[in-house]
Image (cartoon, rainbow, N blue to C red; front, side):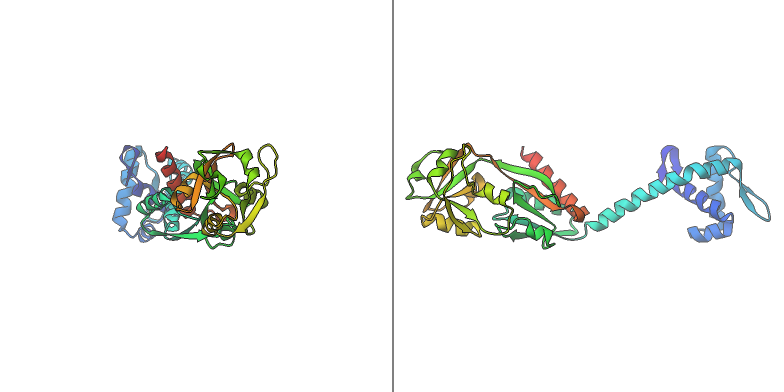
Length: 302
């Protein structure tokens, strides 16, 4: 390998080993070359520099003052170069194996596109997608069942890192086709006070469950509570049965269209969004690489 000006890194390696051993035979053994090759590499480096680096007598070898200076300046630089290569090798080894990614509800085209991009970049790493409970978006990550998870925002967990945020979409209200709202083109957030909103059961933090089923409108009017459900399908079934209404992001509403449920846009609520989360103390190279793939996919989607 040549580095600037045609300088061969093998010459530098030979000089460093020879500086330690001060013996051509032992240097040759460590480098798995002949003594003649050691002499050749040393002479080539000395010609490149223009001065002697090693004094050799019949009894011993020692560095010249210039050789001592080169050794002092070269050692940390070579250590840094070697460390960079080893770090890259370790990172590459870290991408071998399996990456388990959790998702809520449905892994849509954008998520699966990021998975495909990751697999193309890192063919030695397999990706497993795992559905996680609707009411426990962070438990699988904390428990180690998945390496990272794509969850609905907000996320305010100090032990979790938040990566790319994407799929910002308006919210819609799922109602039975028999509900008075079913024929509406849109609703205001204040009108949530006029229907029972289905909540999410489970150990999710209160702020997160509140985002899925707000207890008050933006102006502070109380929103009647409907039943709590554990899955999106359970929620849709409850909606179809007229037991309440349930908030969905627009893409999820489109994917779960059915004849007995109507989806009505709601104006005045914060947009829904998805984000990738993982444990701060378990941030692996695989997770970082998947986060980059997802971020690139989000950027490309505009």
